[in-house]
Amino acid sequence: MVDYIGVSDVQRIVQSIGIGTFIERLSRQIESDYRRWSDFEKSARLASHSPVGVIELMPTSNGRLYSFKYVNGHPKNTNEGLLTVTAFGALADVDTGYPLLLSELTITTALRTAATSALAARWLARPESRSMALIGNGAQSEFQAIAFRALLGIDELRLHDVDPAATAKLKQNLERCPEFEGVRLVVARSTAEACQGAEIVTTVTADKCNAVILTPPMIRPGMHLNAVGGDCPGKTELHPDVLRMPGARVIVEYEPQSRIEGEIQQMPADYPVTEFADLLAQHPRAGDSSNATTAGAGRRSASEITIFDSVGFALEDYSALCFLHELVQEQPEFGRKIDLVPRLDDPKDLFGGTLGAAGMKPRARLRAVG
Image (cartoon, rainbow, N blue to C red; front, side):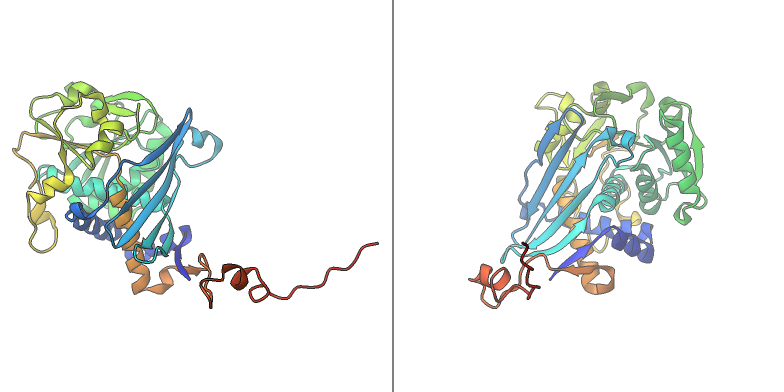
């Protein structure tokens, strides 16, 4: 029997643990795995593009465990009452090839994306950063807001979306969220207005196009930019001149993939970037990661403009699946079991043990007709 975690199971897990705590614990798992970067097989995701979206497979392995995620991105889905992004994934044992866990990853991807964003910001944003602009108030926005509240303690969130209904939805959801109690929510009329006074700017828009969400006049020395929405070829959010600003440094997850999908797809092949794993390797960690020990530790100066060009990488899904599997092992009531793989008395006799006489249950005799 294989462990299974469905949508209702993830809802129950997060409700039991608390969403802020869940994201905090998941971020620690992600950091731990990034610190073992050399152990993992790495490749850009396999993408099947269509005029309206993309379907992708994201595999990785550390030689002991293997994981993959199936994920789509279809921005126009909401017009038909469907989600823009859906996902599921599996964790397997490399020695036997047997699956250990099959899990929903739609909700979990939103959680791990937010956890990764806030983890990177904990290392890169100035320690005193407490105000964030959130540009794009769709499906991922609540997760980003809660993660930055949990990991960085933001106390002001400046909201903007071209769709006022999306901002109203986000504001209402956050006002009902216990983790967001005491946070000042400011609705801005434009991206430029949202960026005024913000120390962190998160862009998480959905349109599959080379959009210009942030331009150089909006950016000040010392800002941290969390560019999440540009995650496939032909989809960006930053004006290329933002990447060329003096004192700007770009951090990516996996450079070969980001060159194809990230903000840096706009730049020459020799445009310099730093992989997140390399940044962590420069800062060995004693004990657990905390605000006190890591806040801003990855910055080279207070005036540096740091840009986390995040497209999502398979290692983060591996981390999420391992984290969920560990939770289910600790508390079996968090998940369920499914018979995804046959159990046979004779592993060399698949037919006899499943569809043959020994494997089939007796059935009612069919009555002759005519």
